[in-house]
Length: 272
Picture (tube, rainbow, N blue to C red):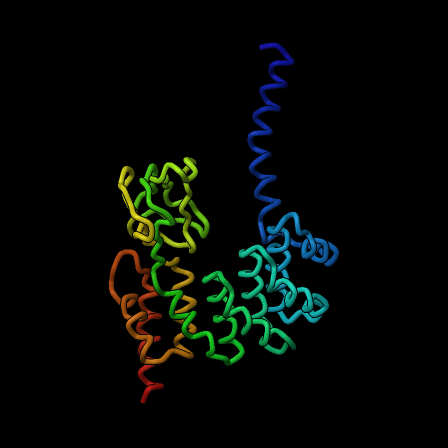
């Protein structure tokens, strides 16, 4: 191997290591941002993840009661109407970190009507911090599995497997339209929530429009936060949604099972 070949070989190896690190560094929400960067990121409409990064940083500072964060409170209220769902979802969580802020309570109440179930759920969870149980139905909904239906009649040409962990917006299946007048390009069916695929139609199956394609169980963190909130605001009508998580099943972590039992106990004591 010549000297130039050695240099090329080591440079290639270095890039193979460096590129994933740079990608991780630029997308990791834990990376500290200066006040100037926070301001720039909050207004970076071309990169929604930058907005999320700034929101996460502000949420952490708010939890530490950093008074300097209040200068960006008007931005938090503004971002409640952002067109990107992930931004609104993070924003709803962040506004729950300071219950003394003027305008946050009213904004979160409006977000209960958001088209995204995840945004509605996070707004409801944040409202509990304000002592407001208005979003209780949305919190109960967070405990329910997502039932995903076919947007049109067609054939499943590709599908993920049951038991697979999936992120919100993750691809579950591809559907080939049956009607020749419709686009022959496959339609992607994605998960509305983060969780784990319980069931999914098999590749090659024919499905009618509106028929169930998949069921996705909510993520552990989502379930745990919902159970904690219902421990405070839950009613007896919510118990059918809570009890399934008290079962000793492999897919239910012990801390979730214990929280479900504590939530039912708290609800029953309030009912008395």
